[in-house]
Amino acid sequence: MEVKEFEKVYVLDHPLIKHKITRIRDKNTPTSEFRQMVKEIAIMEAYEAMKNLPTKMVEVETPIEKTTQPIVEGDKLCFVPILRAGLGMVDGFTSLLPTAHVGHIGLYRDEATHEPHEYYCKLPKGLENMKVFLLDPMLATGGSANDAVKMLKKHGVKDISFCCIIAAPEGVEAFKKENPDIPLYIGALDRELNNRAYICPGLGDAGDRIFGTF
Ligand code: PRP
Ligand code: URA
Image 1 (cartoon, helix red, strand yellow):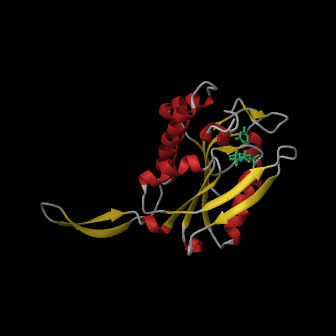
Image 2: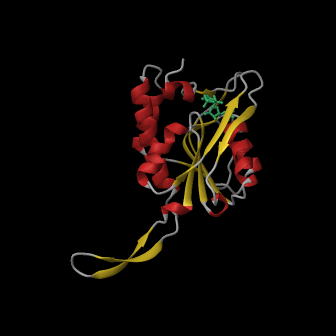
Image 3: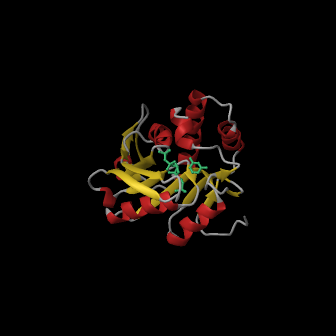
């Protein structure tokens, strides 16, 4: 499928990310390595997606003198994985900012219709004033990501970024059509969806591969 141009779509371009995504594509990569690679990709994606975070100046005393230096206020951020597979990315994000909040949205895709269904939503208080990073390794039809954004907006969230590892052009288009202003970070942009709405070449079912439920 032809990939259209959209604003605020960032396909990460780094040999280490490419290398690790190739490892998780391999059907012979075992669950333990798959999980570790997803975490490491998430760290690099978090680094990129948080490039423009605001900082606050605080006073610190070095062994030499007092100085005023920038910090990131972690408690103004929230990482929200879409269950299950998004859970695999949380450790990567929290390892960079352990003071950030974590919320959870549970969605599963109906195997026949490919429509997402909500089964869980637990978000921290005060979320409406936080910057939210929505996490899910796969953006296929875009249905799950779009529903998750709607749920966050219903909770009053205004500042959302979406981070995925592999996206299909169909998913990018569906997501950007509904959310032109939401930055979309992608590890790899793949060719197309197949007739079961799986990403090609993709990596298969991300949740099953992270949790070993084949
Ligand atoms: C996968 C994936 C996304 C969704 C993407 O989850 O983690 O949430 O599919 O597909 P979409 O863009 O077409 O909505 P799945 O529903 O398989 O649930 P799981 O993570 O529990 O396996
Ligand atoms: N969900 C997955 O886990 N993989 C795909 O390829 C599509 C949706």
